[in-house]
Image 1: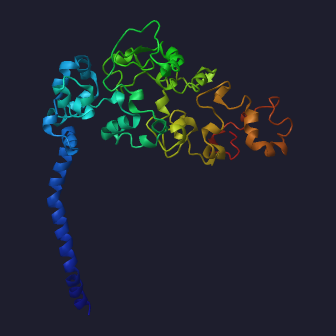
Image 2 (image 1 turned 45 degrees about the vertical axis):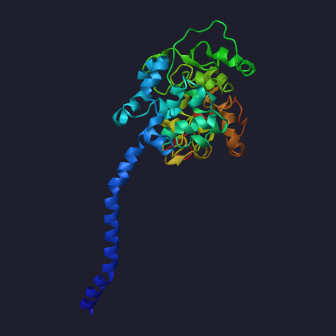
Image 3 (image 1 turned 90 degrees about the vertical axis):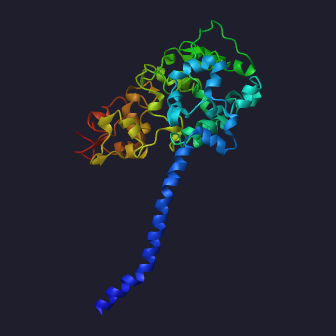
Length: 367
């Protein structure tokens, strides 16, 4: 009986095995063709042609440089220039962002015959940039910046930076610029004006004009660029105790991702959200045998103000006993700690409970 089954089972499976082998062979035969299509699609020219543009509609970056010599001269130090050398010299060029330019050239430079990012909405600009940068910034469209209409060119100078002389009295050009005058005053001490941009807010850093010093093509250095909008955060870094952002030892982007995350306040996403803090404050990282529940539940910001504080250790309240009694007041009231619990008159809690972030020895965090 066993011999019969050993013969019948392979015979029953033979048609299915034959079909699977045929499908795999067909997929393997099609694989080179698919790879060729993907490689061809990597060329911006092919992508534009797929959207309806013809090869004859392109003028070439050399033609663009004849009129836009000021931009072409500085483009060699632009990170985008490295991509232009890809695909046999047919990589990212002027027309990869601005669209086919032959009609623009033939009309003698008619601005309506070319895509002008300066006249496009933030969403249109974002779509143009994300056509290449979507893999690097997949969460941008869900970010607070995108929802608020802050586009790529609000922070980045795509052509690179143009050195210029700081005007002694910059005057706003319209009513909307008048509202930004206070931000202009904050930025003047650090940045130079970009001569091709009329908005007085869009200054560029003097050091950023040096090739290789500004790989992200930011219009201003951190934190000045961030402070131009987030002015409510700036005073925190002037508190007696603060993270050294103004001293340029820490950057906003060390903790925040301006291009969007799944966390609140665009904090960089990690498996353990406290990792944003513990990547520097490694002594508090753990894991510990006895974890402090508050650290795991509320995180570091349950006790600390990350930007700056008038209190030592960036604490949210001035006295450590008051801090602890926000959670532990019922405990302290019925124990030896009850007298004047939470007052500065008694010994600080951490005099005994020294391992407050967690301990491998004692469940009460006593050393």
